[in-house]
Amino acid sequence: MPRLFAVILLIFGTVLAADETNSLKLAAPEGWPGETISLPPGFAPDMKLKGSEHIRFAPGMMKPASDSFFSYAFVFELQSKPDLTEAVVKDEFLKYYRGLCKAVLNGKVPDVDPSQFTLELHRPKSDAKHQPNDKKMDATASYTGTLDWVEPFATKKPQKLNLEIQTWARSDRNFIFACVSPQGRDAAIWKQLHAIRDDYLKKQSE
View (spheres, one colour):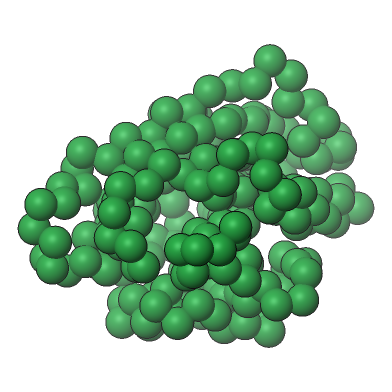
């Protein structure tokens, strides 16, 4: 697990399982550490989503010079309410990232105002190829997004994060899967992120 990220999660008592346990619900290449945390996390207690988050981090997650800096994939496995409307997804992600930044910086960079972070979401013209192929799954939706925030761990500087998000419901549970990276969408890291996502969606469809 990336050390700086792990420290803040441990401080707020949100880690349920580190590295080789529940995080392996997300298959990833060798060298991609992971963890599972409870939702809402301690750094964003105002989130309405309740459940667990499984994360896999790229090897360069905390290395600003790396092509995989701050690149990771995660899935929220959630209770059935609230419904995952676009407004809910946007609001909950902003609460998550604003809370994370505020907790990590802890007032050390007073000029940073997390309330000013923004997230733009867009619906692709066709999102069928990225959705689980299972009649038991419904309320599916895909988004591309851009988060403007301050990366609080390694650089403490403004950063644009590109996100690809899928949401769906199955039985009495809701799911959100996200691939995240500051790299352009044609960068090699996205192939690895998509492979993690596609493997998880395939397992969900079995």
